[in-house]
Length: 187
Ligand SMILES: [Fe+2]
Image 1 (cartoon, rainbow, N blue to C red):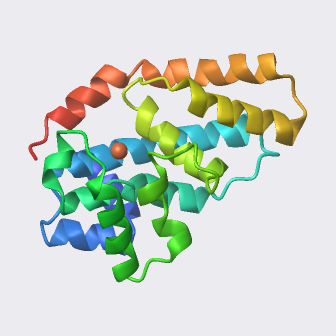
Image 2: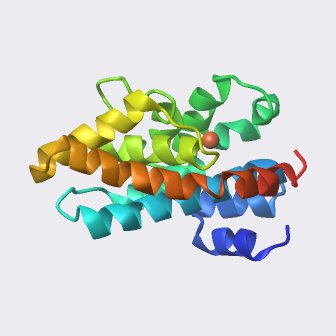
């Protein structure tokens, strides 16, 4: 796999992803997707750090979640191009079988289930990155995050909302480029 972005992701990837790449078990389009979501998650985390340092986030867990959230698609290849949720449980089990602790493996399950009560800001960060990389806006997910920031910082909701909306609009500006980048890789 070529490209600076792909090399970057390889170097930063957890061992399980490195192994899957080395064994050529991870379809290039899936790796491209995980790379994009990882990069976007990094942008969101840096923004959170800059604007709302008082909101505590497990950054390492979020980045791990971003780069592994769809890993179950290694087993369920058809879900790389078509909707489906079989990959979620499969991914969770794959990670557990490779010795990953449940608190890190959970993102394979939670990235599509932000409304369930056992999720927190770390899960929502991964879910958000997995949507906004392609410019997709999800009101209830964004609301959860804005409300959480307000609770933790005592800031006014309108102010946080506008600020957060700016971030999401900025990220969305490159959505077409990211989509083109991802589609460029075969699956
Ligand atoms: Fe995804």
